[in-house]
Amino acid sequence: FYWAALCSLTEGGPSQAISQEAQRRLLSLFHDPVDKASVEVETVLSQLGICVDPCLVENLLQVWILNCFDHGKDPDTLSIYYISSFCSHSCYPNASWKKGENDSHILIAKRNVNAGDELCISYLTQEQLLQSASLRKQFLKETKLFTCSCERCVPGTMNADLCRGFRCSECGDCAVFHKLKHRRGQGLAGATCRSCSAEVSATHAAKLLEAEQAAETRLVELDDGGPVKKGVEKLWQSLCNDHALLGPQHWLCNRIWKLLERRFGEAGQQALARQMRRQQDDFRSQ
Image (cartoon, rainbow, N blue to C red; front, side):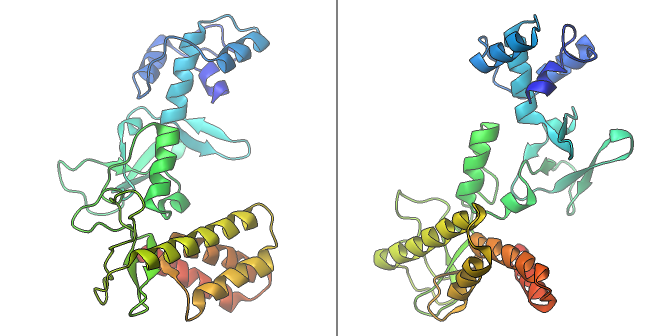
């Protein structure tokens, strides 16, 4: 991001200067204007011996952080497309984008779009879109400085996060979903099973949340280099037994199936790998 900001200078930068019009357009994109540069920006300029206005670089830095698209890998490169940068975010976007010929930016409708509808893209990766609403909103708040209010993140006719499903203690179906809007600590207490209409008690809600936290903690350990083979299979077995509390319509279950697909594929167990892929497909289709 710092290098991109430095390459957006009209003079005095480390690379070929851009035009004043190009810089004006960059600075017209969403960011919170600042009148004082951060210590980090001032340090970078000092170390590189670049004599430009630190506040200008700070504002350009924020523009790149909040508006850029991933352009390529190895090396990692970023790009900003002026018109596309005005597209709002949605966790249920009606458009996606891809890189075209000559570095063009192509918007593609994901479903039928009526005249006058706003085109929305996702600022999240495909994997992040499958996480719970609370995690998606937290990431967007921290990285893009806004609170998502799309149809998947705020309650409409159904106050339920469909990426955070639990098994009903009465009928056993995965038909209890964490509420999108709730009082503190009341995300599951009082929720109603969509299959049998049983209501979740406060005691059972605590058990469900405890099981969720345990599964997430174990996944973090696996991501940090824990024993993947035995660890992920143990998690899988715990989600398949008669006493399972999570899923299968839960984002943590989807993460586990993805790990298992890779593990089974590496072990040559293609039938099991395909089964894990089908589980992920089922999760995404809900």
